[in-house]
Length: 444
Ligand code: BGC
Image: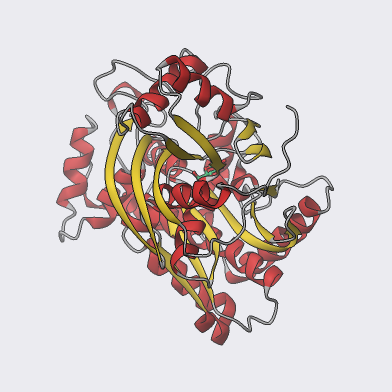
């Protein structure tokens, strides 16, 4: 197949027009309302119980952040006036690069995973001091009270046994007890979108939407109509990655069929770092199959071997003859069939990345239409995650798409990187629950 024929196939497959985005905005809004009113919907709209921080919270707090790739622990001092100091930090991968452990696989147990999580927090603490901990748990959970929540299902291809359907806050407490760390008290459990937003709102009251464009994808917002028991508007975790009406192509359908949960997480599978590398792999195999690239040894890289980092590498290759991509192909063990194949790969990476940013932006616009239809006030969308922070052109594509969809009103909306917001936000969330009866405890 010629390069032109391949591009004629890739462009329509991965391009989402303005008209398609507008349709998506409407269906996303309808699904939000359905989720809010308890009707069947792909959007879970999960209450967080938490309201806007005052920005004046103070004290030292532990924060534990469990996403899909790394576990991060922080000791943070909140200083009030929206200020904080990071006192200690520790990062550990969920899957050991040397192959010594894999806490994300079905072979790992809940106890092993939570022992590992507790050990990260314990490593930052002293045994003769008491700590209050905010736990960012970046998965869909149903909250029962400030520190009790049940994992609904795993996402991002995590498959650790014995966790889905369990009280994950209790699993953490038990693991801390096993390690003799009863001096660490988990006080709040928060989704990462919510902690990212709380971190931004601690500094700027206009922050009312929080999103992750990283290994996973999801967004939360401050819902004026969802009140906690003090009558305050609360943050809702939309679980937007589960939205099921985004445009999809043959590569998306193939990826979905072979995933841990076929049919679920459809938007996330078109959008997030866990999956866009896999989409690139499927295109790579296709290009090889169609003869634009030479056959790949052993059938090419295994499923999920490519990540957002590979897309970044292809996008960053600015050499006239795409030498970086040639080197990348040889590292995969493949021969380099010539410039047309390399150029097609670079185009595929650009198309996949741009589509991801555009789909995410459509959901932001739907939320903005819901909370402020006339866009009469200022909104800050706090975003964290490796795609937003590191993928070349990604943040710019979100800003451009906002302007395309909102016109002049886009001036009232700004996107802001909330780097490591999930750590700071978990600390602030723990602080806001102190001495407050913001949650009505229910039996599990
Ligand atoms: C999870 C969300 C999370 C997002 C970003 C998704 O897979 O379902 O709860 O917020 O990833 O980490």
